[in-house]
Image 1 (cartoon, rainbow, N blue to C red):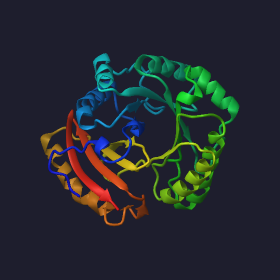
Image 2: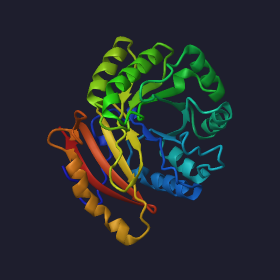
Image 3: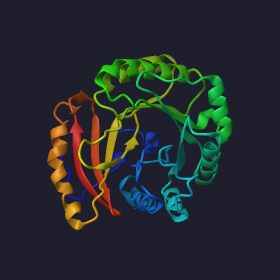
Image 4: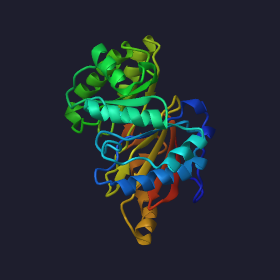
Length: 305
């Protein structure tokens, strides 16, 4: 189903509880500088009127640390999100050093309550979180586990032969984390192809349902085109996917060239069968937005069946 040019679909109209909406800015391109990030956040602030279902915005990551590098979100931007009824949470890497976590804890106190904890799983697994790890992280952040959103990221698995081991490792991570405390949520994310997301979801959901834990499954889609991606996700029971591509061009000609991307994206996404690049993502909705030089274009709205 195509959207009219310039039309934005409100997330809250897609049939799932508004309170489950979570928008995550969770990995920014490495060349991004402070001015660029400030422009992105301002554009997001202006776009909130088109995304009324969102309740939480998460920001920052270990790759582009916003706060201990001296970059902060302008007060007027954070106030704009607050006025829209949105919380703002920092994303903290489990491997981040203590001072980084402390700096992000300050940001959490300023911008909202809680935090998102990112735990990366390597190609063939990584250390499973322990109760001691969780206690230390919670203390460093000054945030109880009940307000921590755990993201288990296995984006490192870029080799098809490693996918089975990585899926097993991710299941192990989730199963272990689910019994360590009452997390605000647990998310499984993948930025790698060709990992079988559908197989992972089935196994992880089964493990968590037995523990009555909450799982929001998410997918980070990485473009194979010459586009630097900013990954934004809404997570919820109805599997809403938002893909936001950060276009690096600087001219109107480059901006107009975004229209040409539509054909390439349609080749990657078979909307009749719910496949992206040959992988089944299940039922849901996909929205594609493009941000460039402070302007937004709603590209396409596709129904995945």
